[in-house]
Length: 133
Image (tube, rainbow, N blue to C red; front, side):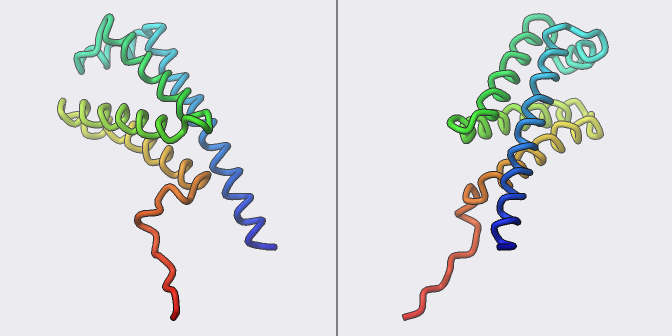
């Protein structure tokens, strides 16, 4: 009984976190689409101004939508991981080490949410049960 409750709690927690993080990504993209001055200026420093900003926002929305829906979640996880990994790399490449923690933390939460919802996704690093002869 306690295993079922724990599994259900894990499942629900992962699902809620997945949807919250997807909303966060869509909100971040909306800020980029709206060309809000401060974030637009910060991204322009990284070389993502004008039309590039719209492209970046579009990629963020695509990743968020793919991650939100169960049928496309694995591809969305890959897509969002690449997107946020690129964000971390861009900040580190411009010596903005403290700023690079924001996308890194979001990425870690995305992987946590995916693992909570789909624990089998880490099948290659989980210990295998030993069969007795």
